[in-house]
Length: 181
Image (cartoon, rainbow, N blue to C red; front, side, top):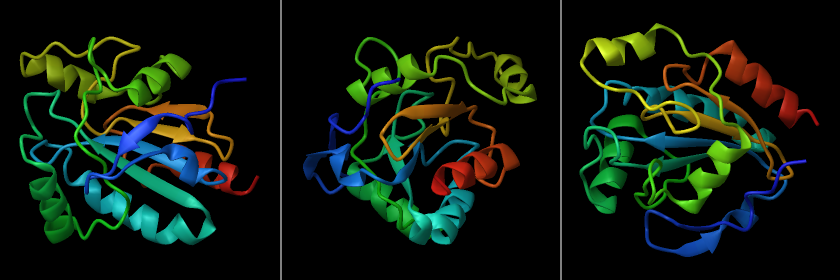
């Protein structure tokens, strides 16, 4: 049995400090996000999924990170304005954090320790290499928009590569299975 993420302290994008305890009993999709990434349009699909599944108990939690080619350089206010204006994001966003390396946030240390390998790594990894980048090896987060699924008990149960979109059957089916429990 894995450890719950509920007691990990986080800070909302508005600056409020709390733990993920308030999400007990919900299914969580935790995503590291960025405003200036080739994958940024995934905000649209994430918001659509949130709109469709929130009433059933899904929460999508967006954690901005500037860890990958400085693709999230803005302040919390700029990030919030960008997400609201461009993608009508209504799901909770949090203060910018580190998701890789020695200074990674305790939440991401717990997430990557719980599920070290990503599901769905496809040709996108090769695209990063072709661009001259050195992608992170597991257990580190590969890039922006990597997704972690957390069950109603706060346990990390799945991890999806950044190029797996919110409407991918692997994510949708896993979420629906957890919501049905």
